[in-house]
Image 1: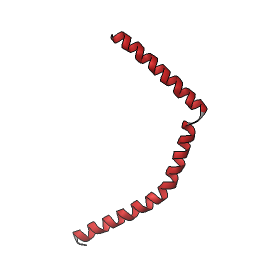
Image 2: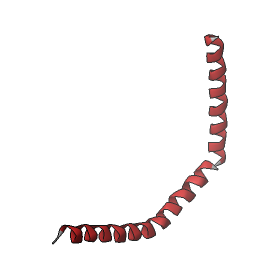
Image 3: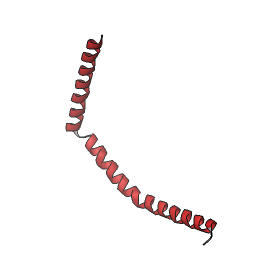
Image 4: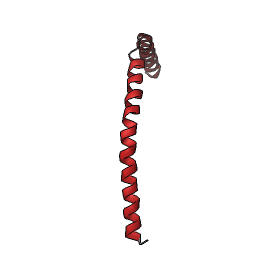
Length: 68
């Protein structure tokens, strides 16, 4: 096989694999995305985020006082 034909074949196979992968991967992406959104919006997780944010604010203020 000549070099240009080899390059063309590799590009064509790569493009076909990309298209096939994106079609198959889209539904899995949506599934993962929906699961992550459900987790993020869970009341217990929201409460933990709020506590962590307040704790970080408190630590930042304390560090700022120490640094002057």
